[in-house]
Amino acid sequence: MKDEALNLYISLILKETLENDIFEKYNNIFSKFLAYTNPHYKYNGTYLDKYINDFVCFRNALLAKDKKYKDIVIGLLSDIDQNLDILIDQSFCCDATNIFHYVKLDKDKILSKSIEVKVKFDLDGISYVFCKDYSDFAETQLSMMICKDVNNYMVSKKMEVIHEAT
Figure (cartoon, rainbow, N blue to C red):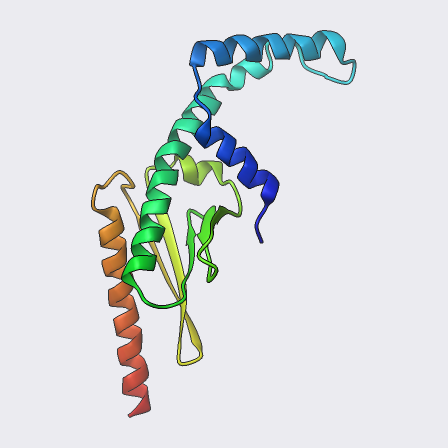
């Protein structure tokens, strides 16, 4: 199910430019505003400042991974003529509607150098799931490697179905 608020949040992170010094300045101002004006805010004015670097690192990782996610999904959809349910890093998905969206935001997966790909497909009424963790998402040929691996897995499952039928 598509989480509209999550996808809006991610689209803003991906589309907006971020100048670190301006972001840091306004984050500091906002943090102090909360501390001085909101009696329910239980932190001092420097609390949010501790998370600036975390946010910037996360944003940079998300920018890089989002591009890879889309390359992988486009590669799979154009290479394989079958309905696929694709889930990458337990966060980014594409189902039979071929609409890309985020279903969750797994910070550890986004920050990781690896990328996890799950592809579900049906053969003769039986569902199969390809799942593999690729250790270096920066690999330039990653999308082609994944397409090849998924195709090989699908062929092996088709051969098993044919073998069981005979």
